[in-house]
Image 1: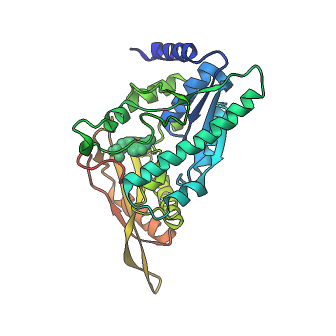
Image 2: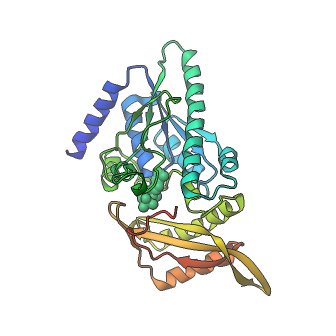
Image 3: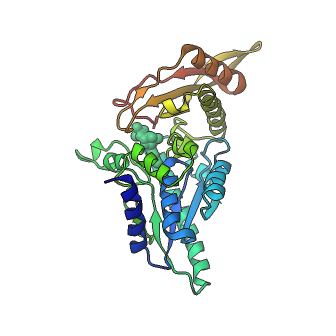
Length: 328
Ligand code: XMP
C-alpha cells in the first residue's frame, strides 16, 4: 500500500465502522503511536473521539503539560486528563516482580478508563443527539502484536505488552487499532501525512508502564523523583548535542542497588543510575548508541552533581537480543 491511499482508506474504514453518532475513547500518552492514532481518529470523527491521558504517576518531568499542549492545543483533540498518580503508586507499593508491575499498571489503566467511559457515556445519555461510547482506540503496532504472541508455549512469551490483546469483558468496548500493521518508521511517515509536528513524530517511544519498568524493583516516590530528574538531564544533553534524532530511544534506569559515594566531605549511600541509549530501525533488534566519551562524561557529572540520591552512573552496553530495550 501507499501512504496517501492508506490515510484515505483508514479514514473511510473508521467512518464506516463507527456509527454516525457513536463515540470513541482513546488513551494517549504523547508518544508517536497514540498521537498518530488520535490524529487520524480526530480527522475521521472530530469531537466524537475523546482522548484520555491517564497520569499514572510514572510519567516523565512535565510530560502531562506537554501532551496537553501538543494534542489538546495544537491538534485540537478533545482531551481529558485523569489524575491517577496516587492510585497507581498505592497499587504498586511493595511490588517488585516486573510482570506483576506491568499487570497492575495495565489493570489500573483499564479501571480508570472504564470510569471515564462511564462518565462520558452518562454525559452522552443526557444529550439526545449524541450516541453511545462503543469503541476504544489503541495505537498498537505490528512489533507489539508479534512479541505478545507466545510462539513456543507460555514459557517463551517475551513479556506482556499491556496495550495488546483482549480487554476484559467488563469493559464493554470494541477495539480500533489503525496502526496494527505498521512498523515505527511507517507510523512516523503516516503522522507526517497527517500534519503532525516533527518533534512529536521524532519523540522517542515511551512505554505505557512508564518509568515503572525503568525503576528496577519496587517503585517508590523517592526513586520516581530520581528517575525523572536524571532522565531529564540525559535527554536535555542529548538534544543540546544535536544527536536526539540519531538515537532511537534513550532513558535513565534506576537500580535497586546502592553504592557509596562522596559529596563534599560526607560519605553518601545512593542509588545507581543506568543510562540506556539504543539505535534501531524496527525495535525488534537494537544496538547501544556509541557516545562521544566527553559527552557521556559530562552527562554523568551533571547527574551526580544535580541529583541528590544518585552516587554512580553506568552505561548499559547490552544489544537486543539478548537484552530488551526496556529493563523490565
Ligand atoms: P522491549 O523492551 O520489548 O521494547 O525491547 C521494545 C519497544 O516497546 C516499548 N515497550 C512498550 N510499549 N507498553 C508500551 O506501550 C509496554 O508495555 C511496553 N514495553 C516495551 C519499548 O519502550 C520499546 O520502544
